[in-house]
View 1 (cartoon, chains in turn red, cyan, blue, purple):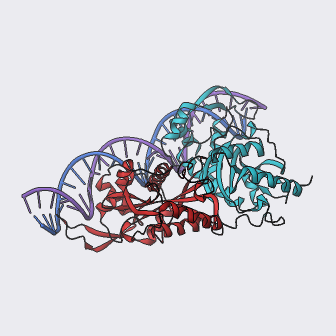
View 2: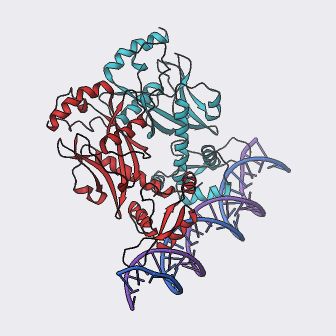
View 3: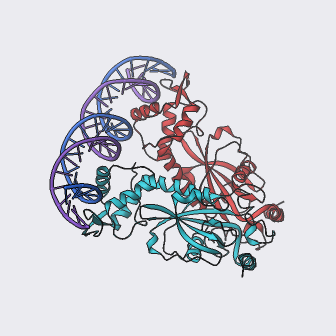
Length: 249
Length: 249
DNA sequence: TCAAAAGTGTTGTGGGTACACCCATGA
DNA sequence: TCATGGGTGTACCCACAACACTTTTGA
């Protein structure tokens, strides 16, 4: 079955079960090998990249919908999502399905709700859904060369801005890093999100003063040079720090 | 024509022109006589208070819709609105129109987009629409005693939180105060939004250092005691300060 | 003459930045 | 032995909080 036919078949089914005109688009950030990445799908139809978005069930809370969508379209589960913006221009998606007629569910006008989340890519084996040829972590640095559908580039940019705002006021890293990590890794994460370098000594002191790290009795062996110490987050204190203050990095 | 009949008559018309399942609710804050107020309507039907919300036209940007809604329902124009949250629980409005049948437009499930704005109440003569008995500025302090429809209390609370966040990082007052105002008035505004008292001397210095005020060659005559100096905002510098930094009040 | 408004001084604190030094250690 | 990582010291700056004092002036 070709991709066009698959979309057509789905259309009637979607009309049954989902609210018209309303969609949700999750922007999932991952951090791996010192790079910040976004989770994107490549649709069979049109061969463009897009966010793993979807529709809202007629009998489903909006927040539930995003969680379900992410599971169906990418195999990602158990992740904390936060709404960051609404995209409601009347023509934001009008050209995408232009070679279908207007009875197609997908072709309606959609107002979409943007959600963002952070996660550690290695936690998941990505599974693309039937619409998509592939589902991948794309480096932010590669985004400019990629063809993105509709206004999804704009959505990602706004999500990134929100992430920067957030990191300036609350600690980040719990969801983005593996269970055990080194201080240089954590610092790199902050640098990548903020887009600037930080002073090592000051970073060390600040993160230590937050008291959210637990030093482990192990080192990361194998690299050249001295083996760096491994840390993990102290969940309780981390959560407390989230409620509290604002920093300026 | 009674209020019930008016709603029934409107219903078919609404189905023609507006997107189903999607609404917008503006939370408009005003500041007057040292109190922070919210703009609310009292619906004829049910005699409960609610936000001056409305629906999104099939051929209208979401942002345009809120502006139109506010004009139609309260007579408020020329105001800067910002999205602050989405309310999408499946049962958030299910009981409100319970004595109508399910074909009523208003009775569908709605996901609503919250917008907030600041304005100076004296700028407008409020005009309630045909649904509403009255349209008024309600003091925040009076909210607890008032019966609010659906989840509108929750929406207002989230808007207020957003306003507090905002004032902590950017100057506020341009839209909330009259053209000319005194320093004590401005300070009171900050205190009311933040819910705590500020030191006068420090406030004076901080606001002066921001350089966003223009001292006028007049005083506010008439009160008891010394006549306070009048100020107005320096629009250019105010705008610049909005782009820039974060404070902590 | 009193109370509010305006303006200024002072002092301590805490955080952030910048830089510089120490030691440890794996290949 | 050298590059990296871990850890600490210090000096400067700035913003802010707290408090206090002065002067002006309208009713």
